[in-house]
Image (tube, rainbow, N blue to C red; front, side, top):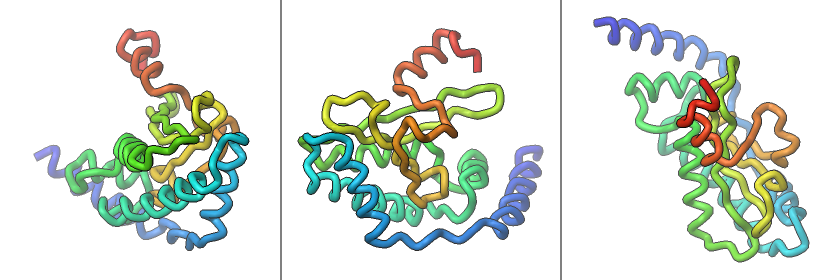
Length: 184
């Protein structure tokens, strides 16, 4: 009974907050080209055709997942829907896994894909995302590809400029959490 009451309250809150959610911005070729240029600029070894393909896929796949997962609210509200069983997928780790796997299917010769994590803190929950870098470069020189943050509208930025999160290798963060080094 308590779960049902909570679910009803969560749904009501989601509807109220969702009504105030901004509409998704239109994404055109200009935005895709800007990401492709940023990916190309990761290094002289990056094939511009691969950069263009990666950018196109990142934008298109974000949009497709939003539709497939019926994401109609802010990321936090959608998380509540997933946690309470109203949606099947759409947590940040779902987006990170799907985006990383989709881009890995391309078998890029000049680009690497990473699944990165921002560890939990006293004021923020754990967050996962996909990241693209030049082949064999550090993830810290790459670009975050985060469709979760804006509910399916792709956010991207050089990882060092994304100060909202403390991006680190996923397995390092996992090891810290399991060992108790990070108490959250």
